[in-house]
Length: 418
Image (cartoon, rainbow, N blue to C red; front, top):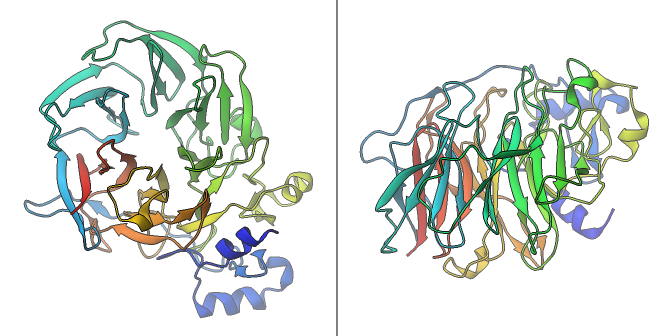
């Protein structure tokens, strides 16, 4: 275990993360060494089922007039766009056009909306439907003369010219992607490498922990790598239950992802995380979690894979539904934020007390984490029974501001430094 892992893994995740209470730790210890899961000597997780698995879904009430999220002192929060329909993800084109994927598990708008801030005042003057009649779109990408859309069931590309305000062609499906599954991790994100020669596609699992058998999970819980024409597919990394946000760490050529981990093992298991993604790496799902901690529901099935499970870099809280990830590569925010990671936490449903429902920040230096996660954009929770909205995608703008997609609040928030 290198020094970097020991430092990061010794940090207790913020809020609800890995910081189990004293009673839970005592119960885990009494269960015996075989049932106590430890990621490293400096981070002890509670035993599986140390607390009861609960369903706790707050009302998603929307934002009352005059109410908005809260950022740290020195920052201003404003409404960038509202009255959208579940605006889950944002992509910024090289020319500054802003594309928003409006999609949901049920009653999905299934469209991409174009926003254009013509005079660069932080408020888009133009709003047009760019593509519609999609199938749960999320990831978007522009490479050369193509606009790529990752629907839940496939990767499509459309002929595209810079500045176009609408695409009406059907496009071409260049990669079939597995869809469905009762747990329905339906989002598919996209990211290109620096020279545009490879595209990475994140594909979440079909279930919580291979509940209906591993055959249902073919090509899932992976990050796939393809050529821009859809050929040459290979699994870049596996064992990632639901990787959604992806970005390149500034100052390195390392891919990072945010992973939404498994449910129904108790309040404090399993921590969601952000991690560097090693080519060919295996991160445990469904057989192990947060290192070589065997999931009791898959006990004894694949000891070989448990043994090769990579410990992720930074825990960011259990059941936080950490989905968004973006590195801050601009200079408008104070120096301590530069090159660090912002994580959109959609919020818990499988925890007795709510966790997530905010944007957190992890500082980085020289391409590696250098401090513990900290709250950045909060105020989404009114009470344990009601939330105003749920942050998902986080996007760094060319002007140095940060956009935060609040899907249930039907709003995109803009954070600027004063």
